[in-house]
Length: 394
Ligand SMILES: Cc1ncc(COP(=O)(O)O)c(C=O)c1O
Image 1 (cartoon, rainbow, N blue to C red):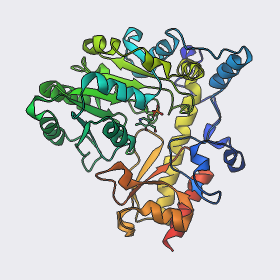
Image 2 (cartoon, rainbow, N blue to C red):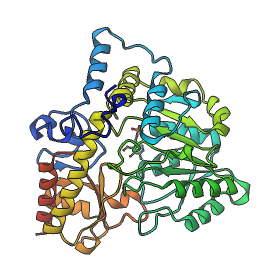
Image 3 (spheres, protein in one colour):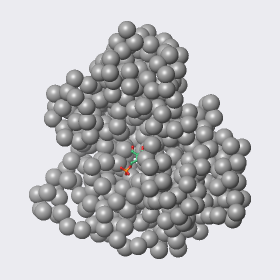
Image 4 (cartoon, protein in one colour):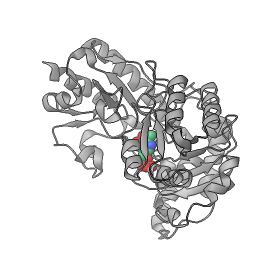
């Protein structure tokens, strides 16, 4: 409600959530980030955040537990909460009537791909990009066609056109899995770029599926444009969720949205798809979008501080690493090629520095010699991460 009352433009009312949890407490967590590696490894890799739950989300979950509200999800609340968040933050009217509940974003991508492509058809992606794009697409017998980002980490329309031409050769159906904002580079595609993408996709009959899971995580002052808001995107789809913005990956619930000309296709999604979603997830994600805007603003301010800190520390300790801060996500994409550590510097950082960052080659073309560093932690651990990376060079 605070946001509706005009709090938005004010300084964040919430404390920085990235400064709230100690390493000892984080080590008690049982999820992937803090459990995959040995206890002497500092984990700055998978997309989990070192934050407590936003107050409104914790209260909604507590209320549900208190009254045993753990049955099946029902009703339009999640889609309506997303729609009001989208209206307020992005000035966009998402239509809850063209939304479908899906278990999570990646399974939503899979289900939408099944609606618009068949086995053997191509899916175009922009490497370096989120590794599961490759895994999930290949697992469903679709082919990957790569259209790498350019040197500025932007979508290259000429390269994309070549990819669309190859993907649709022989009259085949094809889809374009757009990562918006882009993981790992933090690129925020502009309205003009997205409109050009939509026009190109229409020309080739390629169906656009925009993974917009990082949309809430756009730096202060940067404008996110929802794909479905641009002219020509009527046959597109979007996948959205509060999973990244509020650290709710373990509380499964996401939304698939259709443009006006894809609504009939989305309506054909089989009923069982929604069954994989968690009602507790639905409650948590709804509370995040509806009530946890001030918490998100405090997080975004903290992430911007961490990005600036990382840039400073790299300049001091590891000047060979090239870091161009992105405009979104909580990742830093670090070009370590000048360090001479080969294809996979993350392996050396892990072995010699005891810090886990994501190996760039997992992101495919453009990933060699790079690592992805997760900034969603305390400034102290950002600094410790850089210290460990520098130690690994010794
Ligand atoms: C671009 C992107 N899509 C999807 C996901 C996973 O989302 P979900 O857990 O809802 O499948 C992530 C997680 O980091 C991501 O970065």
